[in-house]
Length: 238
Image 1: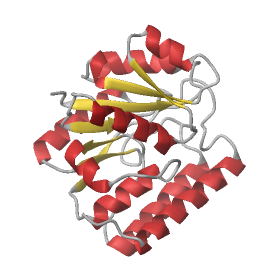
Image 2 (image 1 turned 90 degrees about the vertical axis):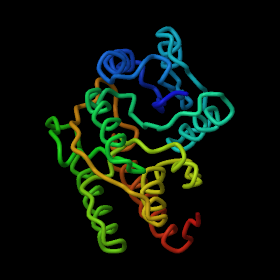
Image 3 (image 1 turned 180 degrees about the horizontal axis):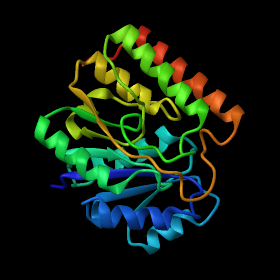
């Protein structure tokens, strides 16, 4: 039984993924077999680099963060791995590998369903978060406080969840609504969700798929808001 499996969606990250994965392998406390990198329709050498490093690489031809995560989850379901926890991490080197050890330790010690890494509570390298990302996170956190009376400080991508709890969420969003879907459904099911501080760095190379352009940031923001309010109307049931 694997205690943790870390899912890393990756699209066109050849400029920094080797450095990012090397850091994760040496500083996360996880072994090479604990990582799954999902090639999300990359047009560069991202999958070749991952395979060369000996890390499991899955292919997801449909663009979308959620699509990539779902490919990995389906693979885990059909394998014999049966992990205790699923961890989600970015492929661009922005996450501090040492924070993964913190996430694993806290979820073990508290028995929580999900632990979220809050960049707001940690140290953010200058320029790592764009103004529109900061605004979007603040708005989403405000909506959660208003509708659920729960205070959170960030909707960051670095998070760990019990595998059994993840199954209860019945995740389905194919694109940018994935993280907010996970958060809202967990709240609706009254799961134990906690935040810890994590550090955040500028990506090692390339441009963010979400905040790289204003038009993309707006599209992502609209999708997140749509997902949030749709879930308020169509609640998940355990």
